Image 1: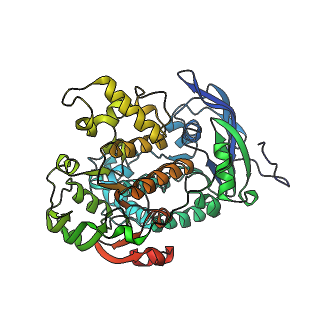
Image 2 (image 1 turned 180 degrees about the vertical axis):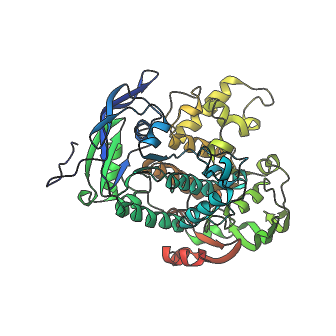
Image 3 (image 1 turned 120 degrees about the vertical axis):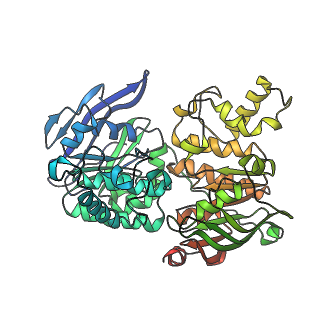
Length: 511
């Protein structure tokens, strides 16, 4: 599809790229791509994982030098040889991959390398802390600015990355999946801020797999596929999200539909949590939470950042750092797993929210990642029979529709969507009774999301019990039979499927 021309005279782009091509190890990432954004505009960039979106943004942000093509600011060619060059030119990038120092505080991370200096050239701690508090408050950040970043959740770290870019006072703000780890409430707060910045004349480039954000915020949208420019058009000319996804994948897209299962299939209680309290340093992280999950049910956990969703899943899997009181009954036995090994042996799998940090061995092969928790299920165990392992891994990769050259491929070379399908498939290989999912589609494109949803629902129809924590309300309403809403570590309400509504879930989650 070719670019659709806009009517009337258009202002000169603030930032533009023309005929940009770049390849890695001979594999093209971008092929003759053009893109521009104007002052006071939100221009969305859409495409599947691996379409070239992040590569283009890294060219604009000075991290990649294109093989061919050029970048200009207000019509003047610029050489962006580094991120420092881009910052000096007024371009700030919020990267999807977090770039923070865990051993430093929030304030120190925000001003690292650009400290506010006071008397005698010393860092002005008070001034930096004041600006940090002001900027973070605009984003709804609830933790102390003096907290160590290593103690924060992924969503909280993402807010810090956004705050870093805001503090740069840039003319162009490039946002690569800025809400991928945020709840709908935090995402709405960021949307308000994006509109404020646009009204002040800031040019904003938005990459998002949440297509409703594109329709709500963007003035124009550009679609990339396989590193090539497919279309640029006003958002008002896009008829539907389905049409946009079809452009992204190059074929007709049909959204996944939930096959309603009879409630009678959920008679047996498999997980019974009674009065669960997790004792934090100063106050409970989770306080007196109780719920039951039926066999074959998809049970949801909803709430804002810090509400306790992840902490409950970690406790069920035996990796919570917090002292616990209360009871957890799985099947007919009281369980308090002391390690993940105990949980796996009991038939519990856990897909963590940060796949790169906690879920995958990025520098190892697909085979090694898939087989790691399933070795005991392979013929010949305790000996490692390479042929049997490779065959089993290849079968699971096919079943999970992981696009790869083979199970000997390095995981780091996969797109984010394929990495996520891989980690879910890894746990399905263990044939678990219970699968815990923490943000199962974070940073995943719409087509890959649909495949993951189908995989989860098919597994549940086969008798798998699923507990899913997600910041995306639409995702929970599609997948779940019931949703427990948490607010500041407490159970705010349990919503049955026939009463699902976004308004109700947001209302319960709000303090």
